[in-house]
Length: 472
Ligand SMILES: Nc1nc2c(ncn2[C@@H]2O[C@H](COP(=O)(O)OP(=O)(O)O)[C@@H](O)[C@H]2O)c(=O)[nH]1
Ligand SMILES: [Mg+2]
Image 1: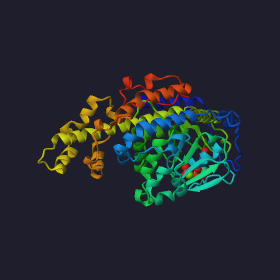
Image 2 (image 1 turned 135 degrees about the vertical axis):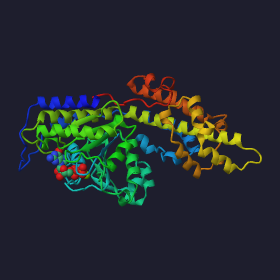
Image 3 (image 1 turned 60 degrees about the vertical axis):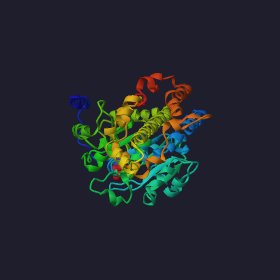
Image 4 (image 1 turned 45 degrees about the horizontal axis):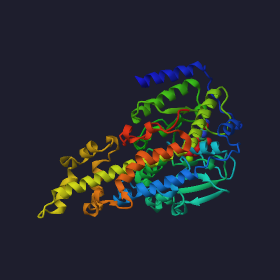
């Protein structure tokens, strides 16, 4: 019903704008005025960027002293392949471009950065062009950096990508561009989804790599064009990976000026129709309908609407830049919540194992029994019941079968034994970081104390702060 309402709404609003004639191809497209880009993104302002170095230092300290010890002790990295590097803590907000091939992702980056007709423009074309993950970041002069070099440099936030193998690193490229916007954000262009291609043909774990970027992106543009609305396996998989990151997703219906109004209306409806089953949230995602390339809009199309949509998208981007510290702290806190739950679970497995072991038992058999059916021993239930853990944050049971396959239970220590006279207990420290230190740090950056958002008392420590961005 909600979907239908929304559809009617869009249809009505588009109708109000009048009908446009069939659009003709302009033979010599003229360049679009870029002044709105510069003013909305404040590219001409010389105001120095806010200095958050003190906050970052504090954040790094909290991570190293209160989160990392537990992460290492319970080998969290083996469960989620996720360890936070210093480069990640200090990195700029990341904007990720996803979607089918040839929908205009690379053109959009070129347009936003004004790279067209410069030596550093990204290659674009009607055929599947980009086969690389391209990271476009700031640098004093134009430079390309090989993936292998980027991954080897631990000061960069991309060093964890090394784990995806050499085949992938050959498909990773960094470009440093001296651009004002890149002083504040980093863009990541991705190869388009090709529905008829098999995973293994890419030679590296495409989904895992996408997931890595999705987990870290501050803003995710999922781009479509009117000719590629079909939903296939790869797109379905992509949306499955986007679960939990709904508040970062913005859907873009690109190349909208290549359609007449009536067609555009139908395409917009069809887009919602195909995506609705894939996005499982009550609030519909924000959709921008416009055309993001440097050429003048086709005549007789809804230029005003497209321009307004473009400006809203730019404002969205500004918000992300403004909220970058808030998001970073929330990201670290969410990580801490997951590490804490993992530690509690491993502790519970270990405690159960110790309780079941007698002098005559075969340790391996006893433990296999527990891992095969943790519910028989109330492992997950006891974590939910005793501590403030949201059931949505509990990892999957199957993952622990693999985890204990490589990490024998006897190699872990109980939480109660992870205390020292001087340093205190690991568990207490991480809980203090989640409930007090990180919310206080958030308060200290002048965004106002938000105990309601980040306090364990109210959220039960497990729930993620909802929609982390202010609405544009
Ligand atoms: N009509 C129209 N064509 C566009 C627009 N943006 C990109 N294109 C064209 O679409 C094709 C694919 O663009 P590209 O950026 O390579 O797509 P990607 O594969 O998603 O990176 C190119 O031929 C572009 O010139 C747009 O806003 N309108
Ligand atoms: Mg491309």
